[in-house]
Image 1 (cartoon, helix red, strand yellow):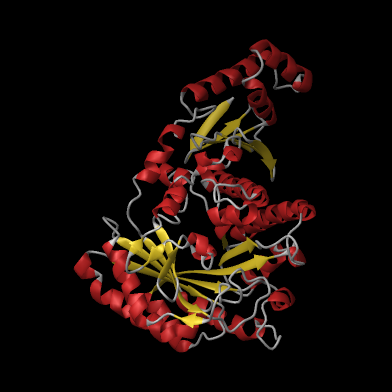
Image 2 (spheres, rainbow, N blue to C red; image 1 turned 90 degrees about the vertical axis):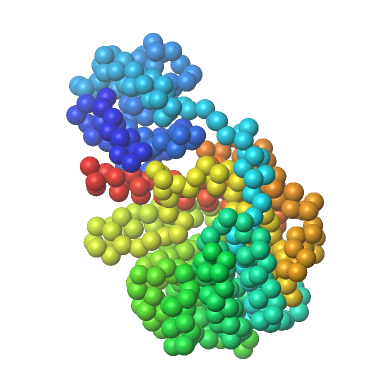
Amino acid sequence: MRLICVGGIYFAEYNKEHREEIFVIHQYKLNGYNIVLDVYSGSVHVVDEVAYDIIAMYETASEAEIIQAMMEKYGDQDDVNEEEIKECISDIETLKAAKKLFSEDLYQGIAMDFKNKSKDIKALCLHVAHSCNLNCEYCFASQGKYHGERALMSFEVGKQALDFLIANSGDHVNLEVDFFGGEPLMNWDVVKQLVEYARAIEKDHGKHFRFTLTTNGVDVDDEVMDFANQHMHNVVMSIDGRKEVHDHLRKDYQGNGSYDIIVPKFQEFARRREERDYYVRGTFTHHNTDFTKDILHMADLGFTKLSMEPVVCSEDDPYALTREDLPVLFEQYEILAKEMLKRQKEGRPITFYHYMIDLTHGPCIHKRIAGCGSGIEYFAVTPWGDLYPCHQFVGDEAYLMGNVWDGVTNRDMQENFRHCNVYARKECDTCWARLYCSGGCAANAYHATGDIRGVYEYGCELFRKRMECAIMLKVAEQKEVI
């Protein structure tokens, strides 16, 4: 058995037969690859059928038992004999000694240390508009009102929020600010004023602001595009895919779909972004479990940076995803991954946000364990200057953390978020994907279980499938290199 290490991915070739697959001590087969992922080292091993089966038995069977089982299953193959099997076992032992296979968890004891060291704030989500010009049925923000009153953020509140961020950012140089809603373009003048204010003061404080604009596109025009392309590090454009899918839930207050209004604007916006970051982001529901068609539709419209999120809502809602939908959704993720490989070879690649994974350089172990930093490093700010752990908690008074004048005053709640990490959830103990999701989204856990340290199991199942596909894509990419 021969191993080739490329960028942290190990390709195993058993004699003449060259089959690739990835295993992660989670072992799985996808698109012709046998894949083994070693959870704690992050090493990915691509092996043939024999090595795949030997690895599955290695920790629970003796060498003699492994040899007997392999000979019974593969003994009629010319290139499989006891000597080759022993050599494969020896290679596994070498990988284990090198902590690339069956490696131990070295992080549990330091998980809380990571979170306790997080004292500074580096990102804010500014809710510049608790109002919206669309009336999307599945909107978690209650059509932008967040279950409260419609409101627009004043420049004075936004200015105080930026001052608050700078004052509490510690050694962080790059500060993230997302202009959010509702629909932030309904308060566009204040957005521009806040950007100009931030640019005027950032150098004096040794900081650099990176802005993101999230918009439904209705009010996008040339002036918005030009300003955003000059100042916005990223732009998130909301489209759900095919016209009939998008218009089914994303309607205006007269009941008209918004597809025909926004698509030409977003196409021009993306074109003008050139090399700047943007994402076209959609939401799929029970009505479009064939969501890959929506992603590819958006790609065919000319968008190359895509995201598609599963809806999170009450099980009673007609568009809620069901347990019966899961096999279909799993298949869709696989179809998408294979189509992405095909388009890559054809010279028309697309990026899917949920398949973006770096197996060699990141994210760092701090991020893998601690998660997104909501309620500690990241806060949402309402039009009135109130602080919430993130945008999905806004309007829930139990999660009011303070305000931009007095800072974080609900220290007990912040401590609760500080304990919210991958090791705080017992359900994560046996999950192979734990160091990729960092324990999952606290807001999704809260809405599903009533506890930010709970587990949104449906989301977990979708996440694991996405990671399988993402790793497979990396394997295929490395295969092309060697």
